[in-house]
Length: 309
Image 1: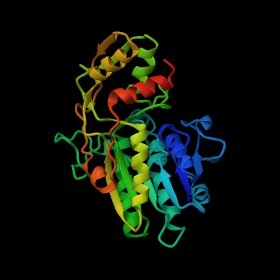
Image 2 (image 1 turned 30 degrees about the vertical axis):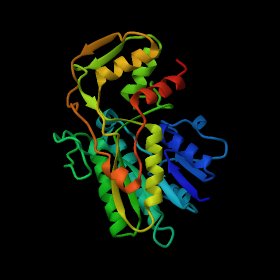
Image 3 (image 1 turned 60 degrees about the vertical axis):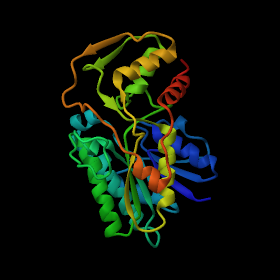
Image 4 (image 1 turned 90 degrees about the horizontal axis):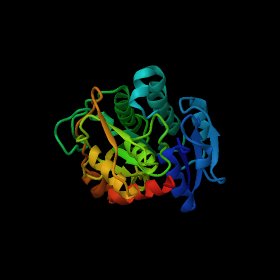
């Protein structure tokens, strides 16, 4: 079995990926600065390097001897990108270039890299569902950095021979997503509060829709993408379900699973919030054979169970 590097492997998505790889007998090395991720999310068998993904020397050391890299380390927060523009940029884009640079220096054709992009690259694009060919017009520093990652991945392949696959995650949810983190999604917050029989707040009328994708389906997509990198190629895939759910319907579904009625306070919408986000998963299905099929109720039930509510 091969050895893989997972940057951000102590975090929400990364720790699920590490668990999946180890379950199938792979050795895993994790690079994480523990600013968001938690050491206890890893098994004792995973090798952990604590440090900054933008530290080029450390990333080269972490990359040494691995057969592939899953690059998930990032500051996945629009608000943090607004408040600490330069710091978030360093983690999100400089860190990604450090990974690609290390990958090109090792091996004959470069170490293959599967990296996390985001639906934030699309911005407020009116035509739905969003495909990989839809216009990209990011509205945030985070989205701009993720688009930059995609452009540098193209350079990594064309100029340096590094095989890459970028996965544009839509709204990922599931166990281990910390509801108290400033980077948490609406599902973890709703599950935490409704599970404790507490009221929730919805910005706007709640009819804004999102494409929520369960973390196990994201892990399957990451692994399939790595398996596809058998030559120098630069690929992009939406990781989504192709199904939309409104925020208010989400709240009522979670409340129903908790056996309560949702106590909702509606407040004015946040400036710049996207009204509709819905992805097309057809390329993911056709080229990688992955169908993000977890039903929202099943994923929500597993998330609630993980919170012991």
